[in-house]
Image (cartoon, rainbow, N blue to C red; front, side):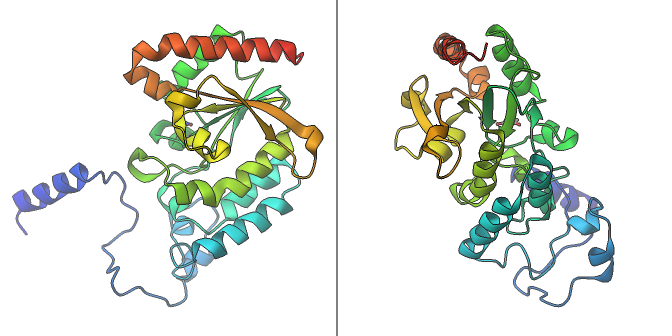
Length: 271
Ligand code: URA
């Protein structure tokens, strides 16, 4: 192949959204290798690239039902936030961890009254292993500050703990797969108020047919601890900061929603 055609091929891949090299060489996906994973993949410590390479019999070959069952079992067994993060690291039901660099679990104060749930890590979050640290995170910090909050007085996580390749939106199947971990996360934190940051978080937790344009700013209820009706907490959806950066005219509505959160926190005795 000439240099020109190699460059043209690379450019085409960039146009298709490819932004990571996840293996040392090409793989024939029509002839999956279902033999034992290489020894170095089994023995390698957790965070080396070969340890993150999918074993041939794991992610991608599990049915969604089997993977959800496994997510439910692993999430239920987690007794604190550290063991929940470790369960997510070990969970093999999704290929996302093999293309991501770092687990993005949460940031902020788990004892804070409000828990803010976004969509999924982007490139900056994936690099730093923390949610909302890129451009939209900077806007989220300003939104928190506008109502007297920061990362010491709030707790932040995402629907997905791994970055989807190319910063694409989580698929509904991915959101469903990781929901047992999110439900357990909410159960362990037991926030007094939940804020769903953007349409994906709203769709995942509220399970309503309306989009974020209709849902934002309205109060709903969410039982934070399974089987405990006393754990019902108010939940509100707001526009995602990345959306607000593209649609600045919506900032007025976003401000109204933030004020509603401030008032509710005050009423709950949380500010
Ligand atoms: N967008 C999100 O929804 N979450 C992040 O962590 C970063 C960007």
